[in-house]
Amino acid sequence: MADLQHTHELTYDGDLVTKRYLGDRPGAAEREWRALTLLAEYAPGLAPRPVAFEAGAVTMSRIDGVPLRGLPVREEHGVALAAALAELHAAIPAPVLEQVPVRPWQCAAVRDWIMERAGRRLGDPLAARAAREGLRWLESRRPDGSGITPVFGGGDGNLANFLWDGRRVRVVDFEDSGRSDRAYELAELAEHVSMWVDGEVEIAGRFELGPQEERRLRECRRMHALTWLFLLSYDDPRNPRNPPGTFRRQAERVLAVLGA
Image (tube, rainbow, N blue to C red; front, side, top):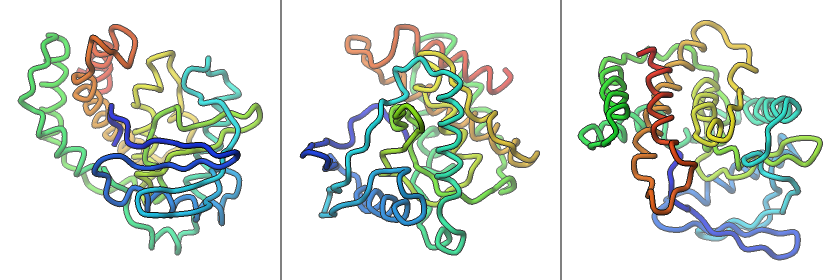
């Protein structure tokens, strides 16, 4: 799940990068290594090439490109981003994907994380209203398991993890990757704060989904929007990570996706 903490440090040695995980992130290095190894076999060039693994650290090739976050995202970027996601999602053959562990922070875990913060005072009246409406919806939600299209999920919707090299988009950061479903992955990306805080980047609408998958997408977007409401409530106003007003804009976004 997206958060506001640094989870790793990077060191560079020529055309190699070593990613070392910080704090308590059980399995993060293993997930990263598994993802890079699978993608090197089934989608070469989409992600860094795996070079070496040791406990808590992965060394990989350094790939060219500028993070999409911070760029004025144009149509060519959106097309390339959708193409990269489609390639990522479909890269692993079904029999192999079935053996890949489910990625962390699926719906049940995210729901529990939100409910643990149900009593948090959010201060801003609009944010408090958004939290009340969101929690009311979450408590009444009855997932039915429909709308599932199995995919390989990258596990982090931050736009900074998608690199534009002038021709295509490639993907980095797989510490929370694993087996997932397409609607959930698109919802996580669409509702990540990086996708709209500097200018809306539309991604979910670039994929053709059936009615059940569209319904799951809407539900998952609501959940991720609510997650970001609570995540942004922890942002330090003396050292903000996002532009002024982001928290209130997130409250508006929660109410919009809820139709409240």
